[in-house]
Image 1 (cartoon, rainbow, N blue to C red):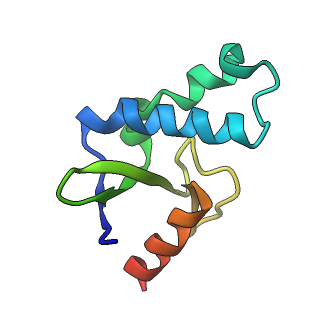
Image 2: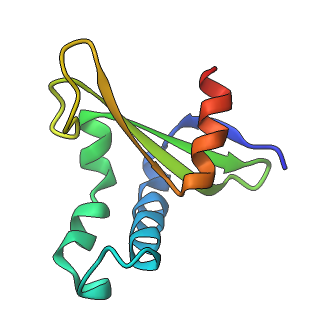
Length: 105
């Protein structure tokens, strides 16, 4: 399968947010299911994209979003652990991590 990795487009933000919620639900990380208040936070991809870099893995030619990763540089509200000169990244789902790693290396 070919995978293209690129910045998320605004038209894909809803799909990325839905994927995030789906993964968190599957991993049992939303205690109250779909109605968990954190699900709404996960779906705020536009806000995340304003303060960090949101990349997607898509399957050409359909363009279906297979996964996403957020890279947040130090100082971003999404950089929880990064110090000066560092950044945080949060991949979903884990299989996408390998595709992004290959692309970055």
